Amino acid sequence: MQPKSITVYLNHEPREWRVHPNDLLLNVLREHEALTGTKYGCGIGECGACTVHIDGEPVLSCLTLAIACEDKSILTIEGLARDGKLDAVQTAFLDHSAFQCGFCTSDMILMTRALLNEIPNPTEEQVRDYLRGNLCRCTGYASIVRAALGAATQEANAIGAADA
Amino acid sequence: MRDFDLLQPKTLTAALDALAPNDPATRPLAGGTDMIVDIRSGRAAPTALVSLQEVAELRGIKRENGTLQIGAATTLAEFLTHPDLAHQALYQAAYNFANPMVRNLATIAGNINSASPAGDMLPPLLVLDAQIELVSKSGTRLVALDQFLLGPRKTVRRADEVIASIRIPALRPQSPVSTGFYKLGLRQADAISIISVAVRLERDGDTIRDVRIALGAVAPRPIRATGAEAVLRGQPFSENALKESARIAAQECAPIDDLRASANYRRRMIQVYVRRMLEQTWNKTL
Image 1: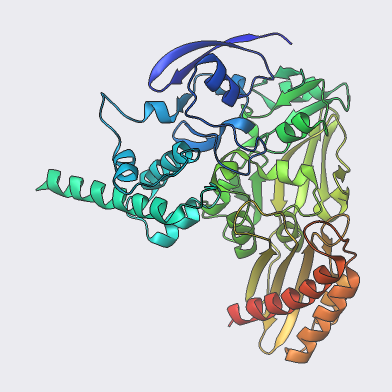
Image 2: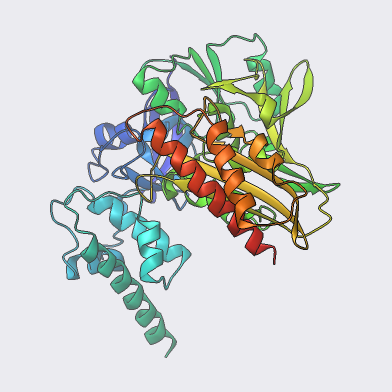
């Protein structure tokens, strides 16, 4: 049907999109914006691979119509590092080697970021609880959980140092 | 994905205008977590969707004369944080619902309208006597959830109606009340229930003054186990009474064999979890 021109704020920058009602956000990101860090996994909302933040909340881009993102802020893995500096969660994933094949890395990092925004100092149980909809088919969960806890500690220390 | 037209009304009046022709191929769209999957799989083939996402009238939770009025667009995530939605059964069901990303999109009205036999929020809403507010250009009607659900994916909602709110009446308990919900799934997230059980129990000293039991995923739609309730209502609490109620609940349901579990296993698990949830809700009213 009729395409519509919309403005979105993609990774902190305004973008004009011309989208059809049946364009999924996932496909617009990957095919139109060439942001392939967001992955197409199951396509039915059960694996978490396509997770992005919309207005700060983690949602699934495979179940989101692009046209519904008008005037909203979209954050993908490509927008997490600012001014060439990795986010603390990204650094922690590197430090803890929290990936094997890498397919779930984008969604695990974005979910961990969302968790720490909500609960800055989570318990291991809270981390596992929050990440339970995100699948790692290499089953490398132990290091992912360690990385999430490590990122929390690092951010707490950074705030402590700034306060001192 | 197949082509469709999309309308994005900003008011309820405009949404109802769009649905007024009462055409089953024009469907309301809420969070989309069922609808988009259904369109992609070919299970749904709407020619037009009327998005309710920007309709402000469908948002918000309020209390009026004791009745809790939950806006249709309330997301499952909001059920975990809103202080007025403090029924334990609703909280447990929302907590085990899909995964955090889906909970940020999926709405309570969407879960009800999908009318899955395994719909997570339906057993808790059944034991809370929830009513569904349906609105259309020709008026408003309130339908008890028990009457709203007809069968798998079948409800009494006409194509020109939208769910505007879910009403949970104040049941004016004379004694301590507790609710609970348990979902038996194959894993901790993204599970479709093998069975689920919701209980609302009102206690008067050593007696069960009132009890409601609802069962999910063991019949064409979530059901009340009225026979299992009847043997407990007004009776003194005892282990044997609970066991008898659980036995009747297992007889009242009509499960099927499918890839998640056999009918026999489902019946057995209904017996186990009805007893456990009765015990748990009883103990919580102490």
